[in-house]
Every structure is written in structure tokens, then in C-alpha cells.
Length: 101
Image (tube, rainbow, N blue to C red; front, side, top):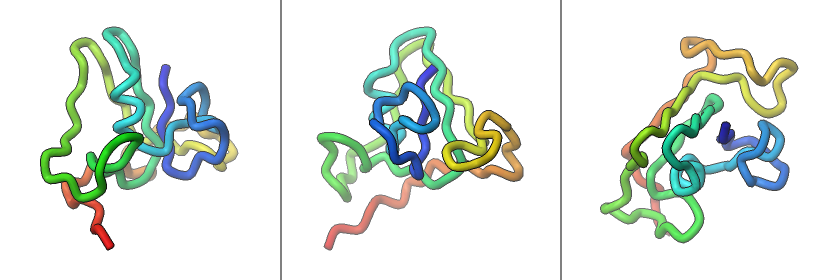
């Protein structure tokens, strides 16, 4: 499993909720067939991640074959981070690119 949480403050290597990637693109880049990406509540944009230019209009979420994304987890900082409730812990994949300043 690969973990993603925009609030995680650890190593950001995707190995746990504490060390979750902050950006979904980073998890997608490392995922291979059969991997599950667990995504905590938050808003995730395709132009955020290592080596990606903010505001890049070509940015999109593209999964490798066989990769599964599951969203709606409580995530880092919650007493039970593995609780999944898609109504309560909303995960939004937004096409609104990050504004460049």
C-alpha cells in the first residue's frame, strides 16, 4: 500500500500515514501494477508533486495499469487514520491547477 495525505509531516515516502506522500502525483509515479494507493481527506491537484511545474496545463492524473486508488480515509493526525468514510472524509481530485505567483 502507498499512502497519500496532504497533512503528513514525516518522511513523505508513502510507507504509512505518518510518512505519506503529500501529493497524489508522487504516489502515482511510484505505483506499479497491483499497488493500492490510499488517499486521505483533502484536495489534490495534478500539477503538484516532485518535478511537476505548478500551473502546467498538461498535468493530469494517469494511473499505471493495475493500480487502484481508494479515497475517503481519515489519515494522518486522526486517532484512527485507517477509518474510511467517503462522505465524512472527502477526497477531491481537482482540475483547478495551482495558481502561479
